[in-house]
Amino acid sequence: MYTPAAEWSLGHPPIQPHKELQSHSDTSTSGSKASRMVRILMFVRIISLVRLLRVSRLVRFFNEVEKVSNANLEYVQLFFRILSLFMMMFLLCHWNGCIQYFVPMLEEFPSDCWVRREKLMNATVGEKYSFGVFRALSHMIQISYGSTESPTNEVELWVVMTSMLSGALMYTVLVANAAAIITNVDQAAKAYKNKMNHLDDYMTFLKLPNDLRLRINKYYGARYGGRWFDEKNFLISVSSALREEILTVMCSSLLNNVPIFQNRDVNFLNTVLLQFQHEVFQEDDVIFHQNAPGDRMFFIEHGQVLVETDSFPQELADGDYFGETCLMTKGKRLATVRALTTCQLFSLSSDRFQRVLQSFPDIRRDMEKFAQQDKEDVIHL
Image 1 (cartoon, helix red, strand yellow):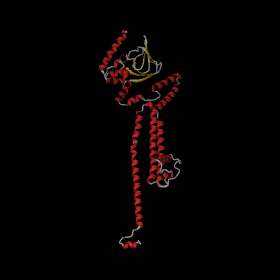
Image 2 (image 1 turned 90 degrees about the vertical axis):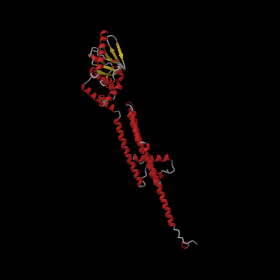
Image 3 (image 1 turned 180 degrees about the vertical axis):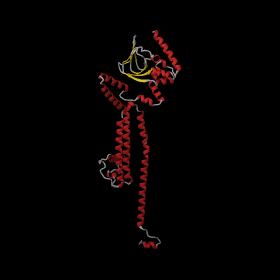
Image 4 (image 1 turned 180 degrees about the horizontal axis):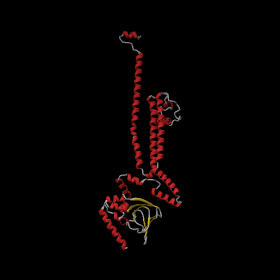
């Protein structure tokens, strides 16, 4: 019969059962700790995957799209602003939902955790993700639907409080961005409406007749197209190089159509372009009368005009020019010019042009010869 005394008599100490149980318990505890550490490391690695989403790059992308969008694509800009806002909100809900699931997972899914209560232990990844995001969104928008149970432990309590705070942050960001979008959308149109309101008050104060008020309103509509821009101050504020480039893009083709400006020095042409003034005339407006003193030349950017002379009328349209004889001589107008449609014109005054010629004496001499020859041709006719 085996007894501890017999084992001692054989020279072997007796086996202690409680030491085996303790050893097994220690092994189980260390295995549990190792498993938890693996989960924590897994969670940290998943959190580090945030950089793969390139959130900052996503924000920069939407900002760049807004910048390159044309002013006529204002609704496209508004769409991208709203889309970027909702993308950021979705990312917040996404990571909140993932944390909602990973915290119980790190605790090896205790019996009272929400994953077990919702019977999601054997559910698919899509179901777990959907319930996690739904639970996070319920906390964030602070409604009881979807998360009626109170937190069961301290960790879950802190997770819920963090989720609620992130929801408050989401509300703040949403309201702030919505207010900014409403305030900033179509500022030029708002400025134009404000200017027109001031104009209406001024015309009412002067007691102008209704037909004149209507013509003034039409002029502003044609001049600014429903959007108010301080064009003069804008051109003054930019550098001379940028101002030249802007006017070159807008008017260089108009200048090249005039024989006296063809094959001229680029510096001379750029200096002339800086003297251009934008003018708008409505239908039936008389731009100038025959025999009136000439003080500027006109270039037609868009519209049609009728040149009425003693001999025959002539229609001019986009890209044409008229009144060029006054640049050098400041003589009287040879015809009456009337706008057939709303006309967008650029003008070059004689005084400004003379100041430009002072810096280019060779071109000035050529211009004087050309003006003298043109004057002789007119006398001969």
